[in-house]
Length: 83
Image (cartoon, rainbow, N blue to C red; front, side, top):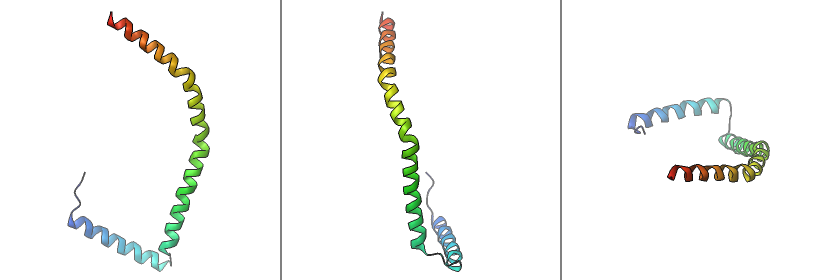
């Protein structure tokens, strides 16, 4: 992990100041940006659950059949290897 030096902190402060001036010029409110980010995160979470929720249920349904078969053959192979 890279070290955080004093020059890194100064560079970050300068970058924050420049971006802050630009956002203030365009009359962007920090609360609006934070609210937008929270809504975006919530919407992405809801979307991922709706998209991947079905996939997870299919994976679990298939695992009920696939994993016992795999375990049987795995144990059979392990038993042959011990002889």
